[in-house]
Length: 251
Image (cartoon, rainbow, N blue to C red; front, side, top):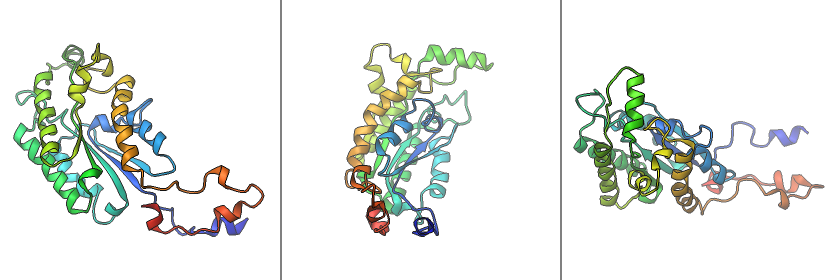
C-alpha cells in the first residue's frame, strides 16, 4: 500500500547510537561471537551499536580522527561511547614506531574525554576500557611467524591499563579494567586468540562487564516501534502509522 511507504520516507529514521571507538580489538567487535554483537543483541529496538574500530591505531591517532567520527553534527544522537585503546600504545619503544609514552597516553585519553564532554556527552555516557592482558608466549609465537621479535610485554601493558584506570578515576568515569579482570581468571590465556586480540571467549568475557553498563545507560530510551503484541493484526495501521515520532521520542 503506497501510503505505508510514504510516511517519513524522505530519509532513514535516525536512531540513538552507541559508538564503539578503539583499535583492532574494537574493529573485531562484530566478529563471530564478538562483544559488539553481544551489545547490539541486547540493545536492538533501542539504539544502533556503531563500530568505529581502527586496526593498528593508538590514542595519538585516535585523538586526530575522533572529531571526524563524533562532532557537533551527530553528538546529540549519541547515548554511549566506549574508548578502547592501549594495546598499540604499549608496544615497546625500541621495537615499534607506534609506541606512545605513558604520560602522553594519559594526556591523549584525557583530551578525548574533554572533547566529548565539550560536545555535551556526560561522564556517565563514556566508558573507558583498558587494554587486555597480553599472553607473551602466544604473542611471541605470532611475532616469530611474522619474522619479528616480540614487541609487547604484559607488565608494560599493565602500566597502560593502570593509567587508563587512573584517568577514569580522576574524571569520575566508568572504566572496565579488562587487564586485571582477565588475570583473575584461571587459564585466562584462553580469552586471547593470538596472545593480543580477544578470542570468542574473551569477547564474551568483556561483554559480561559491558552489557549491564549498556543497559543502565539506555534505560531511559523507549522501544522503537510498538512491540508485536501491541499491534492489532486486523488494524496494524493504528499502531504503526498513526504516530509521527520526533527526534525527542528517540533520544
